[in-house]
Image 1 (cartoon, rainbow, N blue to C red):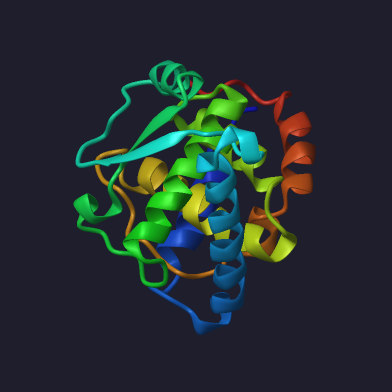
Image 2: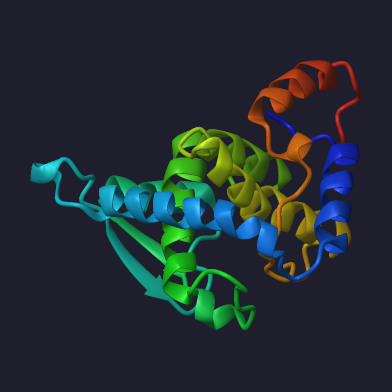
Length: 194
């Protein structure tokens, strides 16, 4: 899985051009929030009751230089998550706690589950992997939170800063995982980006 730079730039442009929040996105964000909380309870739930038993610790700085370090921690049933409140970039819909829950489940069910890191290709693979755990409505908000923000950070801010958090929905074609698989096959003919 690789993120085509033309597609990444188009997603970034849509994210940057979107307003800070859009009330029409709130139903998708409500579904996204409910489903994220369910995933979080599964992640931290005791193993004897069907959970994974992972202890999540919220920290004030970026805890992992690479995905391998994070995967090693997850194997030990622990995970560090960079606190949303420490970013100085509040979310217009999610509380800091809800945002931290999402960061935890995305790290485990996106990055660790795909084995992919935090570069643009790893973020794309993590979005695609984790999107399978959300309903079609919720995946629209999840796409904004992952694919949209990451593309803006990478393609518009050169990786120097995080994109402003938004509560909006990107165009449907950017949040449909079925279209990504088609694009991934077609992109194999393109020269690999440097």
